[in-house]
Length: 222
Image (cartoon, rainbow, N blue to C red; front, side):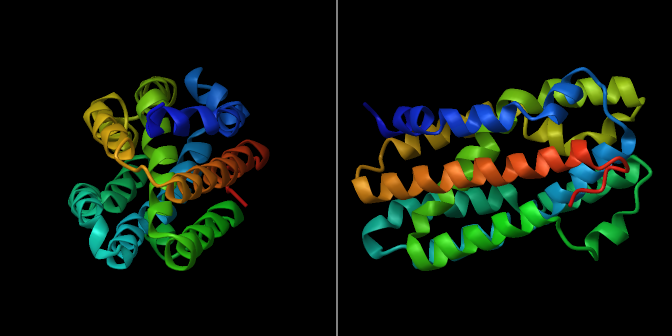
């Protein structure tokens, strides 16, 4: 079995646990407040602002024998650069305080997720970065577009308030195909196990962030 399918299978339980978060169901029905949506965007800003630094860190640690992966990471960096600024623009379009978010700090779950990812990439295996990519890109492709449409309708938001979700939704299908083909070239069992383990932990921590959004009345994730 090709590794991408193994990755899908071996992270299914963690993925389903994350997708069972109440806030996702509420979002698909448009049953969230503007504050909750801004809180989600705020947490997204904090992790997305570290995407390029994490990719760069991973690329710098790859051995010469994995130059083909460094080329893929360079492509990801070019694609992902500046996306955190899109999120701040979305926050402004929602009436939120983008400057406060820029100068703020992530909630506990995202703080732990970032610390974990830097540790895995820098101390364990640079290929762990693909565990993060699997969670964030794979999940977004499946649910981001319908959630964006539902939120825009329910909260009466302008389209420029859902740029981040829409850009990581159905339009990102080509990126997912590229990721799948890339993972199928990873044949080392140790590398595969490290990617799967990282993805499972990121699913859990991202799910914690989503659950916090539903639990805090004013939409401020803890």
